[in-house]
Length: 205
Image (cartoon, rainbow, N blue to C red):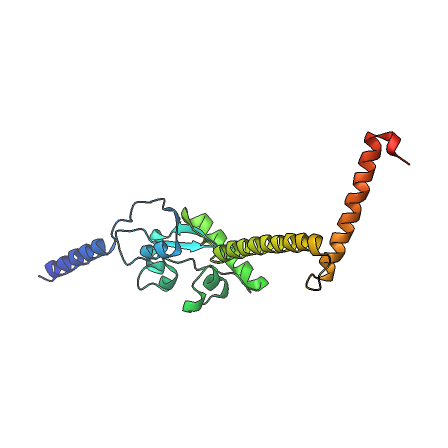
């Protein structure tokens, strides 16, 4: 009777282990995805592979679900680029990202060790897409504004030059512009005289 009871207990344990050891999801190349999309592979959905990134490179860590899956000691790293956290050996939310700014030499060396470990143990399945800097549009806007301002300045200068030619120097015209105009007028006059002399040598004095 006792043998039957032990046998039933053993079979129950076997079934329990089989249920826990679900087959690993098929290896899938995700390609280039955003950090937001990477969060979908944090292990909360057992049908999806368990992914994690280091320095923008995404690795399938499904085979180490006991460490990186829900309830595991490193579960907070799953579905994220955990470069900064691994370098600092930190589990804080503020470090769960790929920003390496301000890290020291020893921290970068620690991260390098993690990267070597992942490269040798896990399969790379994609990369984290870098976001487009939000300053691009504002830079283009500033460039356009500068261009418009330059055009307005040129237009104003031309208007002042025309008025100066008609009425003579005005107090409202900046001295720099007046000086440039006089210099330009002198250059044009010299050029005209040189051209005339070259065309008609008889007129050269």
